[in-house]
Length: 265
Image (cartoon, rainbow, N blue to C red; front, top):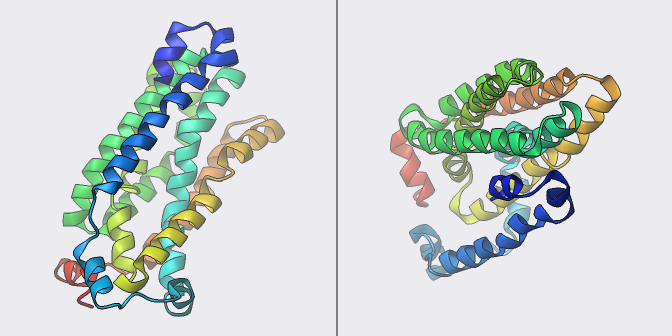
């Protein structure tokens, strides 16, 4: 939608009112999300917990008391993905238009290709992680992102659209492999009784520490250093944090996954 609106308006029109159209249309997504959620039943394990009145009265307190290690691992798993993801979908657009002086249409197209790459590899990684394991899939994705941090901006700074497209496609590969297995990995980290609290807490804090300030920090780094490679270093630090979490992740054998997730712990 952003790309279509940008192509149909001048730069001045897009800056003054065009950018609001996609955000207004996102109201439709809220309606769709509400419709889907209202018709999705709880999983069997949570239905059973409710029937047995086995829900914890203070799940967050229990989470912090009994599963601190798993919580830290889960937070770390999301930091690089969320931070690098925000650089892909938010920062590169402003960097491309303001610093590289490329058109907003070009940058929206590059960002769209990167988002599609991320989406495709997310779907593939979810499937691959069932066979490879969550840890190995995460490891490949994290190493790919970390290794690509500096080549990414070196290619971007050429202002060559084909090279920029190659940069975002490869970055999408690393992002997909660290996002596809996330839901399953999170479910397999926490026991059923505190799983909702564990997943919610880890996802929220991983997002805050990872992507919450990423576009702002990246803009500041470029302004202070005069080079995009400072952002590459910032991305690499996040990848190293996530790498530590991946190495600390305890992989459950395939035979144990279903029993644990369904509550037969």
